[in-house]
Image 1 (cartoon, protein in one colour):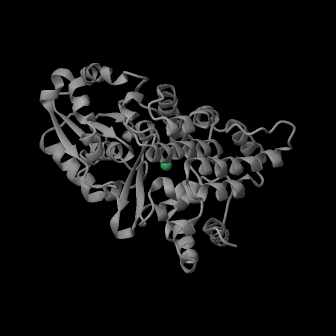
Image 2: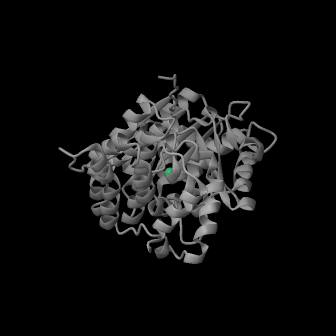
Image 3: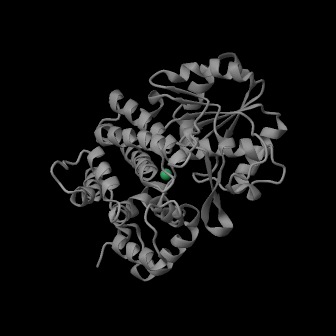
Amino acid sequence: MRMYSVFQPKSLYIGPGALSQIERVIETIEARKILLVSGPTVEKLGLVDRTLQAMGSYRGHTEIFINPKPEPDIAIFEDCAEHAREIRTDLIIGLGGGSPMDLAKGAAVVATHEEGMRPLLGRNLLRKKGIPVILVPTTAGSGTETTQAVVVEVPEEQTKKSIWDPRTMAEAAIVDPDLTLDMPPRLTAETGLDALLHAVEGYTSREANPMSRLYALEAMRLISNYLIKAYQDGSNMEAREAMARAATLAGIGCSNGGLGAIHALALALDSRNGFNHCRSLAVLAPWVIRFNSEGNENLYADIAKALGENVAGLSAEKASLKASEAFLRLFEQIGFSPYLKDYGIKKNELNALALKAYRVGQRLIHMNIREFSEEQTISLFREAFGEK
Ligand SMILES: [Fe+2]
């Protein structure tokens, strides 16, 4: 067994009403000037106001930065960092889904590195600490509140890249399922699927370790039991709480255990019209899982079991196949198509798309449990297209 490390925020506050702790958390950081980074939908839903209220006397020392783009690019990160520097921010709060939280984490480290964001993209390239960050998710999916990664859109390369460094880790994460109650069913399903795939890849990655697997497995069990319940009845607090906890556990799982081919190949799709992060994952998951399970039957049998499949008495090989079947069944229940042809992709662009996905996914592909080639990526994309 090789050594491994486990990073997570210094403190986690999880459960209904956790937002009420934010004033005390700010106090421990001894902040005097705060930048609250959020998104337009979160603001419209009144969650920015609710957070400011919970901040008590710190409200008067807070400025707000609203992320103007669903998938923020480098220019927005640098703009936000510049603003933080100008007003001498000593605490950044990220409130929202993955994008505003990533923006908060990214701006916090870009603000202390005068060379801008581009040279920081990659693994462990930060030289200094960032501004302290508190993260407050309003969805249950990205897990960004617990990860050591910042994802950013790089427009000139039409893909996403990331800063992967423990120095991006938040001081505190406040995971309050009350804040997720307004999520519509579609967003509940999409973000829940993202969390589930953080767990699956955090469990199977080459870099997985006993701790990441522990978190990932529990996340899978929770999501399997509660995603449909939260999707069907958004006011089901038990389901919302379980999903919020699962997303956080899955985030710790993949941040420490790594990702794999599903997230890697999804990078090239993410920024295309008709896609978002979760749809890109949906068209890859069943096929990559089936591909990966060959030679790794025991791992995928564990996943099938965690997803509630009846694997009693089955050989590991047969049980492992049930993992991808579980995904196809889940997609039927939440109305997702697992086929590229249903998202406007044309058959004649499959090869080019697969090759691009293989190229831009390199930084994550090496973590995938099974090695694969360009040709195998093309076969996977043909399968994902949905027409033999
Ligand atoms: Fe993801």
